[in-house]
Image 1 (cartoon, rainbow, N blue to C red):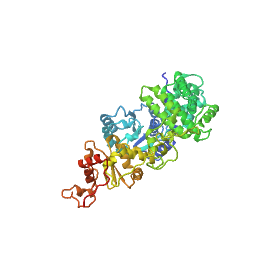
Image 2 (tube, rainbow, N blue to C red; image 1 turned 90 degrees about the vertical axis):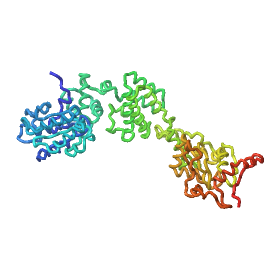
Image 3 (cartoon, helix red, strand yellow; image 1 turned 120 degrees about the vertical axis):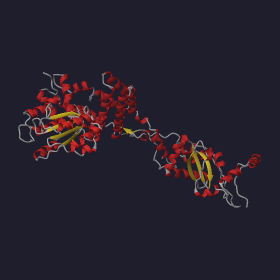
Image 4 (cartoon, rainbow, N blue to C red; image 1 turned 180 degrees about the vertical axis):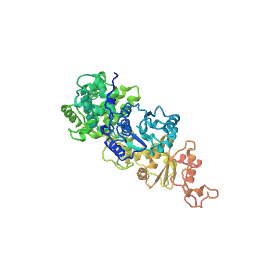
Length: 585
C-alpha cells in the first residue's frame, strides 16, 4: 500500500476542523443554515492556509447524501463525501487553472454546466489558481458566472487575487484566508505527532511552526520529512542538520565577534561555519534572523515569547549579547544581511560577498556614504550653505547608520578640508568701484581663496567649478559646464544655500550682489543669452541700441571699452587697470 503524506492524511473534514480560519468557517456555516449560499465564492490567501480544503468541505456540506438538504456538518461517510475527499467525485470537478487556462477549456466548462448533476444536488466547479486564466478565458466565463444554472456552484481559489479581472471579482463573494498563527500550528502538530506516536522536543515543534511561515501544509511537509530522517525522538539539532539553519553556537559566536569589532575572529567563524557544510545563503539567513532576535530582546523583555530559544541558558546568553547593540545598529545589520541574501542568490561569487558584508558589519564606522557626507558638509557652520550643524560630522551618522555599537560612542571624524580660517594665510584685496566681468575672470582664483579664508571651504564647493560669464547691475552670472550641471541644479533648487552664498560673496566683493547660476551649452558658449529680463529687450531691438549722453553705460559697452585694442595698449604701456567706464556727456 502506498504511503500517504501527513498533509493529506490529516486534512480537515469539517468546518470545525479547519485550523486558523474560524471566521470564514462560521460565515459559511451561517450561509448554509439560512439558505443563503452564493453561486460563486473566491478564496484567496497564501499557500497552505486551507483554501482548497475549505472548498472541499463546502462541497461536501452542499452535497452530503446523509441529509435531504445542505448541512453545516457533513457526515464524511457517504459516497459523495468520500469521493469529494479523494477528489474524484463526478459532480465536484476540481480544475487546475494553470493547465486549463485557455478559452477552449472554459467553453467546454460552459457546455457541460447546463447538464444536471449525476447524483448530487449541485454540480460544483472548484478552479484552483484561477488567476492563471487568460483574459479571453476570463471573458468567456463572465456570463455563466453571473447567471449560472440553479444547480451549478463555483468555488475559486487563488494566491494572487490582484491578477483577477475586476469583472470576475464583482461576481464572487470573496474570503481572505489569513496566515495561520504559530500557536495554532504548534497545537495541530502536537495532535499529528500523538496520532503518529512520535516523540519530539517542544523547541523542535515550535521551530517547525516558525519555519512554516503561516502555512499548515508547509509545517506538515517539514514534519513528514523529519519523521523520515529518524525513528527516534525528534530534536532541534536534527532539524539544524537537515535544514542547515540553527540557533547554533557558531552563529552566536559570529555575532559576538561582530559586536566586539573583532574582524579576524568574525572571518574565522565564517570559515568554520562554511567548513561544517552550512550554505552561504543559509548562513546569511541565520545571521539575519539572529539579529532580528537580538532586536526583539532589546525591545521587549528577556522572557518574551516572540523569540524561540531552545533553553534558558541560550536565552540568557543572547540577552547579554543583545546589550552590545542598539536597535538602530541592528536594523542596519538586518538590512545589510537581507541585501546579502539576495546578492548571493543572484550572483556566483557568494563567499567574497559574504566576507565583504562581514567586514562592513564588523568595521561599520569606517564606511561612509559620500552622498550623505556631502549633504552634511553643506550644513557646516561659518555661513555654509544650509543650516548649521553643531559639532564635527561623524562618519557613521553621515552614512545613515547609528553612530555607536553597544552604547559606546565612536570617535567623531572631522570632514577633510574643513581647516580653520587661521590655517590659510591672510589675504587682502581691493576691488575697483566699477567691476567688470573681465576683472572678475582675471581675479577669480584670488576671490575664491579670499572666500575660503573668511568662510571656509564649504562655500568653495559650489564656486570652484563655476566660470564667471557676465556682470551687470551688481548681478554676477556664473556658468557650469555639463559635467558640473549637478551643482547648478542644486543651487537652483536650494534658495537658502544660494542666499548664503550670495551673502558670502557680497562680503568679499564689498557690495550687495545677486548670483545667477546658468547651465553652459558647450555648442553656444559665451554667445548664449545670459540676461532675459524685460529691461534688456529694448537694448537688443533695432533703433533702441543708442543711449543718451551721460547715461550709465551698459555692461556690453563696458566690456567693449575694456577690450578695445587701443585701451589695452595704454594699459600695457603704463601698467595700469581700467577702474571706471562712463559715457561722455
